[in-house]
Length: 87
Image 1: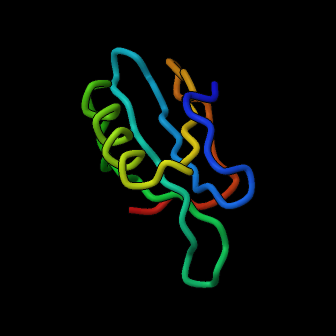
Image 2: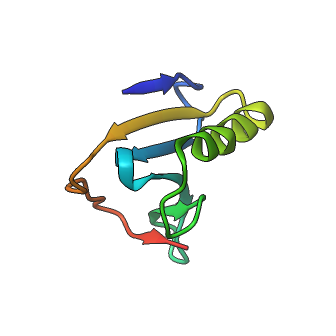
């Protein structure tokens, strides 16, 4: 689900993975050492409370209103990224 629309050309992306009772993770679009797209675990490796994930997102949107925010509800942890996840 698109939670917040950013700039259609240059807006960066945050993805909130919501595993409900298991917590949330927020991933930030970044670039790897070779310039390839990667995802940085902004809220860390362990799941956090939804309120903590939402606070992280709000702080980043306050600094960058062009930021896109997407949320994926994935109770069973099946979603995976084609690009590497780092951090």
